Amino acid sequence: MGSIKHTYLKRIGEKLMVEYKDDFTTDFDENKKKVQELCDVTSKPIRNKIAGYITRAVKKNLSEVG
Image (tube, rainbow, N blue to C red; front, side, top):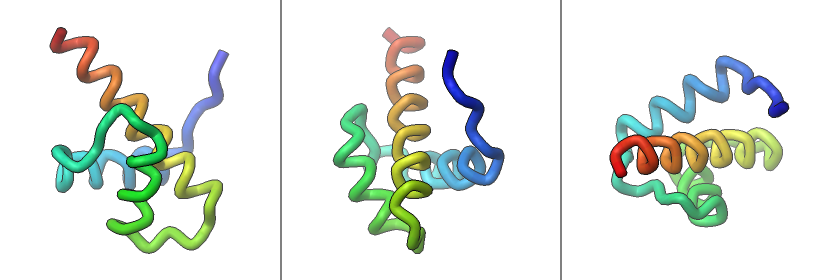
């Protein structure tokens, strides 16, 4: 079983995905760099959790389409 993400992580991740949906891919490392560029997250663990949430959401959306 996975852990449940906090709502503020989801809110930030969803906002970034709506505004910059073409910038995110299924690669976690690329998403991590994009999150760092696009928002002012000072904590590495928080940045990584947001990037992980976005990566999972992108993969989920690709599997639903294909």
